[in-house]
Image (cartoon, rainbow over all chains, first blue to last red; front, side, top):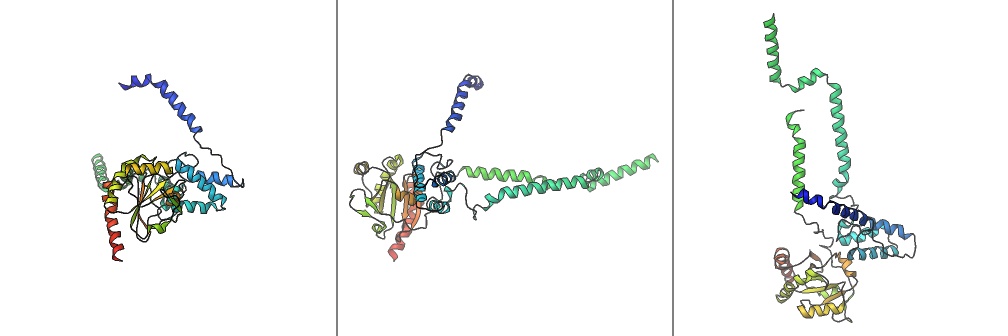
Length: 169
Length: 180
């Protein structure tokens, strides 16, 4: 079966994986960008990290080398030079490329659940743990066993026990 | 714990599975459009064939029309082109937006394959492209008589897409425009 075949290719696969790992380091795209004011550069980098490439989707503008990302990087630079704030630049691009371009979506009707879900899940988890631990503390073993038995079963058990008692008397 | 509550995790798993399963059919490239319902962005660009002619939204002239974003480097545009030619023959007004291209190449391309466009906006640097939120070619916008974008299609518009997405809306917009 294929396992023989695969083991023969094992070394090739390992080299392939190694190459893949190495390549990721070289992925980040570096343009030569010059600013009139160097203080814009950190904001530029920050914005490119948070804006998504509309064409390639799983990359931000900093990582992607697609033509549209190059254009949008230039656009971000141009807007920074025009003294727009980060929020204004995001708004500008959102008006053209929709909310999709923001890697950190704003809180609104469509996204509130996304933002609230982690908190809600933690609260849910805490409440489950609390309920379980409280039950364990409050219940003695006898009560725990009893809770498993249905009413019918308990009746039958009582009858059996009683009949046994009567028999032994 | 009583029996029914034991099934809650199972039901949640089923619901999650169903959600993920139905999400599989969604096209991740189908981005929501920010501009549908908004006016077509203002622009000032040259005409492709007549560089001395400056174009703006005034040249739309209150027509219901299609704006087709295309380029010679765009392979899918070749597939789409015959259908645009046939739409133009049927009397649909189409404006070309030549996107990030070379003037000479684009002119040759249209000479070879036919020119379905009333006029062609030449946007070599993709300026109008960014204002429209274009992220690839071809894209096609349906603009109404008031200059409002009413529909956007990212990707090829062929006969099937036209019939499914454009035809009825186009007809309705034409009727509205004629009624006024």
